[in-house]
Length: 153
Image (tube, rainbow, N blue to C red; front, top):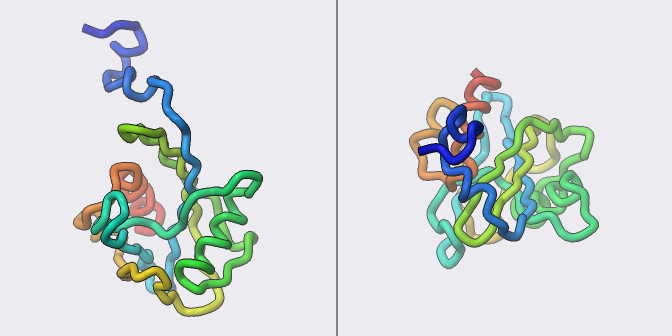
């Protein structure tokens, strides 16, 4: 039985979404090559959600903008140089994990300098948007796949 009128209109687990938890701001990017493929990286062993495929990115540090964090993370993780002007805000994920709530802006980028080179032992691959749904991905990334598929055709 719904507890509020809003719960009746939009059924779901409102209690889990509204429970107080630390909010973690993470930023990610869909790097799109000239073939329309998106670069995904695999979470390495020893990390939470190991083996899952995700959009490259990472945590935003205190007093750091999401764009600056993404530029830093892509250089550290993949040895890529990206200009903030090449990052187009696209969508965001808001997902309640067991011990924190993730807020993740997703950018789209089609221009960068360098070839992606995994520097943290992670696997990576270029994937057509229609095939991304076949890969195991963190729950927060899953809703973004359909949006990217619509954007990239």
